[in-house]
Image (cartoon, rainbow, N blue to C red; front, side, top):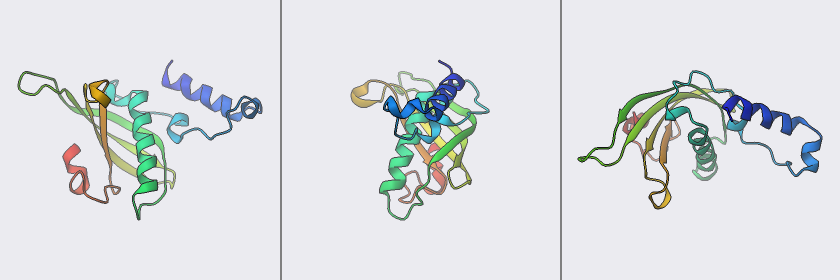
Length: 149
């Protein structure tokens, strides 16, 4: 199902009175209802990647002290700016991506993220690391998300 169709279906379900009787009483995640624009067609704009980032960002703002409690509402200008394929010297393929996210407080921020092929839980699936500008309080990705750029 395309992202647009998925978003339209989620919006329709959340707006109908039948939604509460079917057990859809919880609010949908902000990224589920957003409109993605400017996707370059790479893995960077896939729904599972953006959903993982949105969920982990929500966890981060609720569990890291002194961060504003906001949510990602929209991804824009999604593009892959570098790809390092797996090779004999470096067996992990990496997609370096960047985008602009709109937060629930109305501000736009740059986001940089890395998709590592085959590095998911127990080496099944892919791993996603991300950094939203201004939200790396403990400088995990060096100043201004430099490690993921």
